[in-house]
Image (tube, one colour):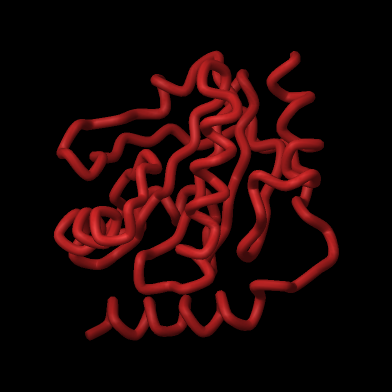
Length: 167
């Protein structure tokens, strides 16, 4: 019950903050916390595997319409930079893979997906509402945070991501 109330509150917050500012991404310089999560196939993925790559971590849930609205554009972003960029949807669905995998299959989503049902990694990353996307540079520093849904294959995203890849 407590988790349901928290997810409900997160859902309300995501609706309220989805278009909270005209700024596409808030810049920051914060060391990214280490993590280890399973993907939807049960394989463990940890932050060490992101070393030397620019990483985009989109924290959301499959029951959150604004979270799922950006999945296609995140897939397109990944396809544009297949070697130097790693894009993950970090799903915080309470039943984990049992909810997430069927959703991805039903909607034809191919985005790499990690499952964080206890929101442990989300808390470490300071996620307080959904969706929130963080961008890590090649050195493991969070260089940007987008609050609310974004078009990750649009000009603003590319203007932010491309210089990171070229470094």
